[in-house]
Image (cartoon, rainbow, N blue to C red; front, side):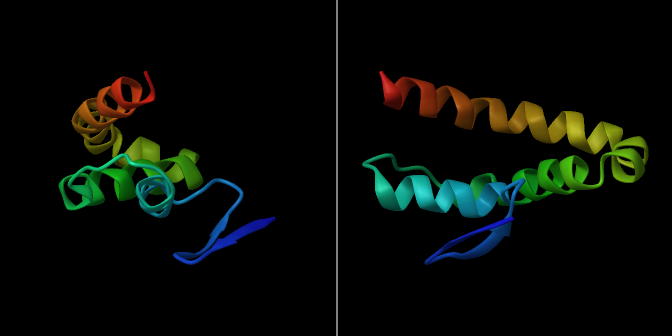
Length: 80
């Protein structure tokens, strides 16, 4: 199953960068998306290929999640 948008197609488990771009485009939410780009890629790759990549990149995954905590807080604050 695929979802298509003006930013491209992504699988059922969305590419987080594309999802962030859609949120920015569809709402008044703004952020420096380049600040989170590489961390969102790491999280997406680990989620898509969990058994292989998570075992190899566990530390990178945890660091990426910590970096994206700020983004999550910004989104939560924006929603309120």
